[in-house]
Image 1 (cartoon, rainbow over the protein chains, first blue to last red):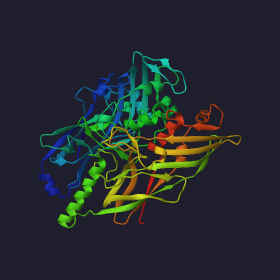
Image 2: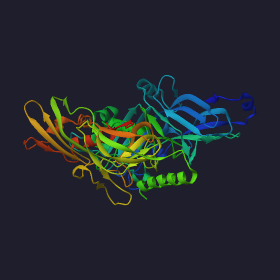
Image 3: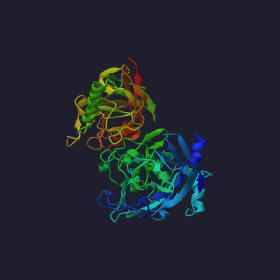
Image 4: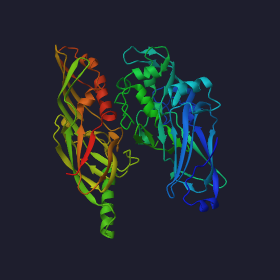
Amino acid sequence: MRTKAIILCTALTVACAEPTGDLTILLQAEQTITEGITAGEGPSNIVDGWSVQFSKYLVTVGDVHLERTADEREAHDSHVWVVDLAALPPGGVELTRIEDLLAERWDVFGYATPRANEESLRHPRVNQVDFDEMVAHGWTYLIEGSLEKASGESCPPAGECRPASQLSFRIGADVDTVFGPCQGEGLPGVTVTESGTAVSISIHGDHLFFDTFPSGAEIIERRAQWLADADLDGDGLVTSEELMEVSAASLFPSTIYQLAGAPFPIETAYDFARAQLATQGHFQGEGECPWTIDGASGGHHH
Amino acid sequence: MTRALWIRSTILLVSSLACACGSTGQELTSFPIHGAASGERSFTKDGWTVTLERADVAFGPVYFCATSFADMDVCPSAQAEWLETQTIDALDPTPQMLGEAEAVTGTVRSAMFDYGRSWLLTEPRVRANEGAPEGHSAVFVVHLDDGDAVVEIRAAIDIDPAAAGQSAVIGAPTGVRTIGLDEALVVRIDPAAWWKRVTLDALVALDDDGDGIVELERGDLAYEELVLAMTTGRLPAFEWAQP
């Protein structure tokens, strides 16, 4: 998809003489999505013994926005795609290209992960059934995967623990979030050059397992027992409906979880999942993009 | 260096620049912080009449930030701060003087604060601040009445920061407020809103000896529900006014 920049020029005669270039916007998935998250004690591991693999990680993403605060120029690509991050190659995929941008620094770069709708575009690696389900429910995410732990147990809050060395999960969620202004390597926005520039929207995959809404990398631990415990009916598949049913207070004890800084009140496990998903959008790998959802804003480093 | 020291450095810098250059556009100021109750004291839920008999809530220290989300990363130096802790009688709607905040004139959008239990960078663990009720973040006595019996719930809630240097509550919206030289703040707390989040049947079931008294402990569902309500649910409301 290529879009001619819709630019508000203050002086057209000057604009025509200005050098321009194209901006290619890639979509990249964090390795946690494509390769999973292993159990262990390292900073990127899940510390309670569970390993996670994702078979599908559909996200609705797009609505790219650029600004130059110096001269108030703007460029916008309003297209939105549904993409399966779990199926992306390591280098990511080209999401869109905005042509004929002023070859200068654009200090504001942002994008959105909105709800899927009829105008959303299906990426070729997303099957039609999943796409239709995303649109029908207005989901931002459809995540399928599995948890494994040889000695694992599922301990639903109102029931007995039972052996569960493997569980599956399927989570569909609307998480209509705007990300930006983004910073990569300490610099805000992007520099467009005449020869063309590529930047990446990066979606992380491990926030579902964070034990806090962090403001410092050193305090985050990843845990998955809560998801195993949310298998209320014991059928081995954790669903969105089960997450909606189970109280967050019964799955996220305050001795482990500190959930202050959540973008909205956390009452159920589904709220927790939605809140964590709202923080997953990044830029150029680990670059930060403040998030805004339901009128609340935040951002963090990790 | 603690966060407070960073803030004091900022204030010192502003002060120095003001001396050197005559004016920086920012001025040192201070404003009073009051605490008060909001909302109702009694409500009905699931066949129970719930009456709050005591709701002492520790508040402070608090840091006000220009950013829309106050936390230690994005707000390394605050626009205003109050470093003490006082207990707010959260059943009394009359504003209660807590203290005087130090500030630099400018806009604030969010706050981070503790409920009376802090973890300074220079200390190995969380400590209860002087001014916290019995060393806790909040102390409640609540009566549940179903028409046949009354159950008394006693709860001492501790809400601790996640890590040294952190505040227990981050990103609390304050509204966009330009702090001038003539400012005042009332922090309003609605404890009934917190108790409305509690699953009452599970709470009453904790009275296993039938004496009509339940002492909540960390790990009890109601305790955890209160923690979530106080940190992610109905946060204290910041009401600005010119005194």
